[in-house]
Length: 243
Image (cartoon, rainbow, N blue to C red; front, side, top):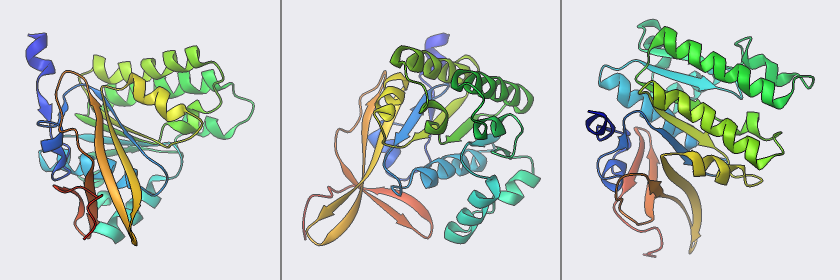
């Protein structure tokens, strides 16, 4: 029975990416989208949530670095995604920096490990309350940067990811590329999708590839990532072929 559950796939909502993943993420897994600032990680995660809403799922967005209203404005202006109406209809739940538990990260007096424990309790309680099918965390590095011990860092990352696996929630977590933290987060994930930018000739090209997907083969190629007024899509072409 457990094998049947783990084989269920969850569509990413990114056109062309499910093909690279051989059907999408596995249900009940912790998946990471990694990339430098400006590569599209937040758009990716929001589109992942929009796909869930389209399928009649309840979704949750946890924002650790800004207030949710900033994300709502950005997605409305860029893509016409009305997240406020999704919240009003009970399809989307936000947990953001204005939540008293997350405000702790603004205090220098709180120990980093205590902050993460508080964050874990907050996530657990919100999941128990809302019972979402999908969760998007944007982003996770803010809480982990102050952890000096790699062993403790790995343990804390596994603790956070374990929340989703135990509750059969499909999670998407973004992480920036900095100080090797991204590699630690990627190591503990069930799947890792890498976003980037390349200068090809005189063009700046967005790129995407699947670094890993536990329990499944993938299309092992770097492809072009396109962002238009309708959102994000993967093109079935290499970014390295100059016209």
